[in-house]
Image (tube, rainbow, N blue to C red; front, side, top):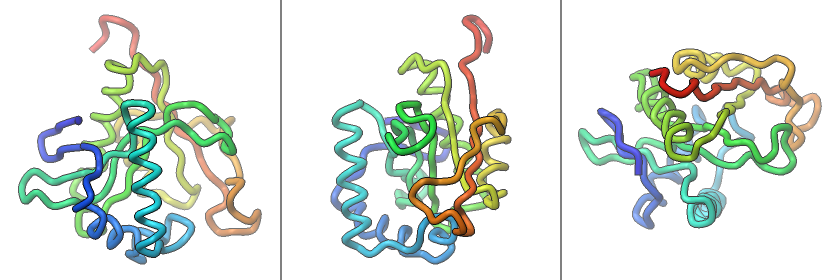
Length: 181
């Protein structure tokens, strides 16, 4: 579990499934993904996330807002998939319900996860990827001190080459040298 001023990032619980399915089915969330998810697809994603956490001790955590206990999305770390450039690297990712966007929660949670990766996992680098057109996610990446690494940008292998989201950008954060705050 990772706690910030406004969020608790924790493993998913069964009672989170309905709220997470609503987030995954929301058209404003889906516009930056490969489309809306059905309840079954969302539940399968929770199963994959839960298995990742069980295997690695970290993952894409449920993001619970402290003020009201509401599940507002997911923020966390995962091992990049084998079919992606950077396979095996630690990837920082987030998705939030539109009602929770624009309040700095993504940056707050992502920064806490980035720091946790450096401090607890001893990671030397954390990556984040998004569609080239997703300027809001890129702004979050910049806000938390990540830098674009154009040499790693790629066409997403799970999308058709002419898909509007095919071109992906890569941002990286490197662990600060010891003793540097």
